[in-house]
Image (cartoon, rainbow, N blue to C red; front, side, top):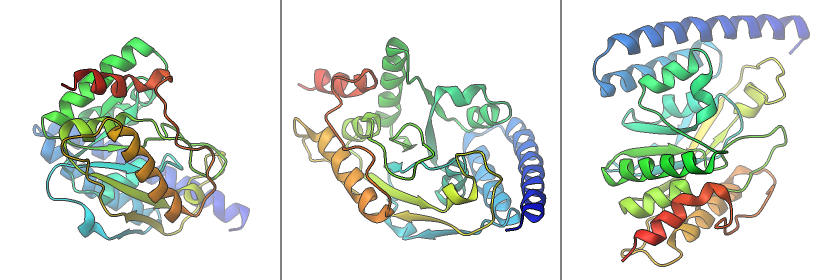
Length: 261
């Protein structure tokens, strides 16, 4: 796309994002029920992608269980959350790094949608967030995680943190891997202006924890989900899925092991 046209498109996209975002926030402030707010966000996310020239294709949506599950997806762009909001049924809640809560407009939107913010750097607060997530899972909530925790300018898949898989094992519910494509080009992490183009979310076959869970069930699920996403993503493996028991962000795994009989 030529430079003038690209910047004109960027201005249009930003205008649409702010316009749809402000309208969405107003609607979310007025709607009293969380289910209504999530349904409104689902519809308006689809509207935004359509008017922004980013048509969304969802492959194999029938693979999403009707019952409780945990969706885990690769992370490539700030668009990923909008794509999953538009693609997934509105019963899902998102698990997001706590830094996003302070972003103007975005933080307010996420809060009204019942998103769960988790601390990545403060160990004590991170452990508290992890326990809260496990309660959510045990109570039957379906959750969406980006288990890499962040994204980089370099295409590829980072290591996975284990919180999503702890939640699934504790709840005894399936893990559903998913692959998002096109968002890195549409809204590059480098800060380059956005580009129009097709976005794809592919739902992979669900992974079901063993019943009763095996001793290393969390790490097995993590490795299986990451291998499935990496195989279908077509991007480099930036690091291997390792036992993260020594890492500060894996308090959920230790809590899960400690709570087993």
